Length: 447
Image (cartoon, rainbow, N blue to C red; front, side):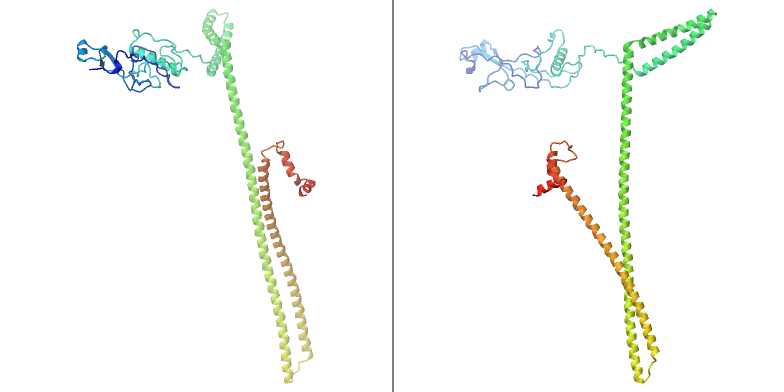
């Protein structure tokens, strides 16, 4: 059969493989080439212009056919004979950016073919050994480790020895124990020295004491070996200084907390005193109101009694008038009958009437004076109450006005509690508020 025009002898061969585009920012670089990752095969161009899709259109390996097969194929173009071979499998996806699992981890997915990495990623610090030296799994692990080092830094390798850490300085407990042991040995050696001086005449005892003092002396020298080193003593002093500063800091914090507690207690006591004063003031106001109400009730009771007595005096005056009219009528009736009372009886009656009228007049004048006094007292109390109500109302209005004025001034010039006297807006504030303290400024503003 005839081959497509693509394979005519006059047509040039497939284009050479192009390097892949650089990876975007943040993607790891591909590994180095190795036998495990063969280079990509030439791709067949698509029907449309542009780069071919390597994964959507697998490559075709063109192999020569046998002569018999070429003759059976019929002919056309006279060029070489080819037949199609199944394409190779697709390469695995690149490894994911996750933590390295170690030397005993399973086989990791293989990255895509090598290509020029991004300009910001460095190349591998060292080339991997050949595959015949290491196995495939070990070689893959080495490449994975190199890939991780290039992406995430330079971690510690499994084969590298651990760098020895700087030895920690002496602890204070160790220094304290060493000093106490040294002092104990010094006291023991001092006692043995006194005993040796006393036993100079007895050679056996002296030798025994000397043999006992030798290991103590060696142990003391061993203990003092570190205590005589400047680095050891300096580290111990630094630790002591650190502990001293820490204790001082804790003590200062305790003092600050104690001062804060004292300040809080003082504030609480002041608040309690203010609350007590407010309660006493409220109790006094309630007692004053209660006393005023009692006085008002007593004045009302006395006034009602006075009015009742005045009504009694008026009734007595009416009774005297009725009694005088009744005597006059009876006297006229007796005169018509011819009975005439003596003149002394009329005088006695008139005398009693005059006496009773004087008594009633005095009582009425007294009751009127009491009524006037009670009325004046009640009017004074009512006036005082009205005055207090008016003062309270004026005080509330003044406080409201001052609050509004303070809000307006704070919006115009800022809060005076937050701004110092040397603030930038203070001259303007003084200029606009000078009328409150200067009469000429007030007259100038009014004019």
